[in-house]
Image 1 (cartoon, one colour):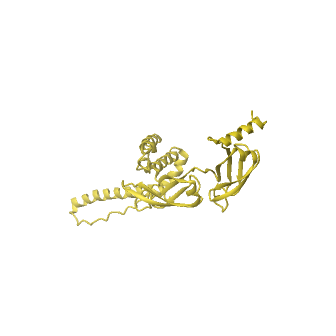
Image 2 (cartoon, rainbow, N blue to C red):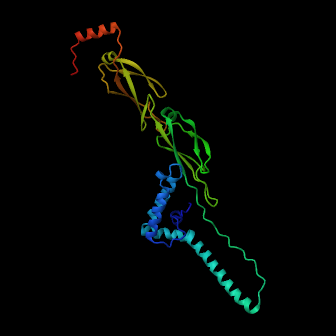
Image 3 (tube, rainbow, N blue to C red):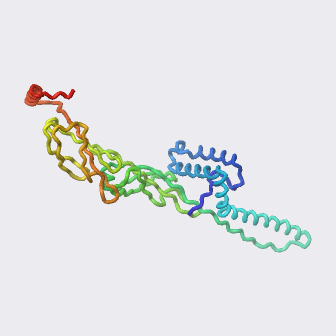
Length: 297
């Protein structure tokens, strides 16, 4: 697990800081990396999350004490060793100068610089979103997207969208995020899938909705009608006297449920009256008007 240096995230080099200093640094960093102020930098949102996470831990005395124990183990002890080595070098230097004053200078030995173990920090994730149609999401598709990388250059990715993916589900491209520090792994590219309703279908969860348009005589007399599903065609029976707004449910003809099954398809009846009538049709409607006793009001 990569250890996060919350003090470094807020801009400190040590944990010897006051609660007021933490609050001031948090406000400064939050303003600098707020996503609304960094629209052209896709990584600002993840950076902003890290800043909020750091402040949440360090602003609470109890969680800060627990975190400081981890910080001392991972970072503080190394800093102390480095400081002690620097102090020893200074002491040796002063002592050496005194010896040289009385006994003459000795041949200096070349000192090896201590090797400092740098903390590996994984690169930040980058998040974006792409739109797909219901049909593309249902059957699966390969989509190409172009994003501006950290270096400012455009980069094209091919994203394989699996059949039956859920709305707002994220696809992870490992290692395509911000570059890691000190040899750590790069962050990932997270692509959120936004499923758009189509002309024929609307999606809610695993249920598909569609409009079933019928004529007045089909509604009055009843009929068998072919209805288009997302992957074929089904015949449904229209009951005599069906009304606009009534719904017909087709089981297992909806969206994929991720378990090998499917949701339902719900067809909402819409009775459509013709706008342009022939003379024969006008005569028939006038005749119906004369003989019918039906009054919906």
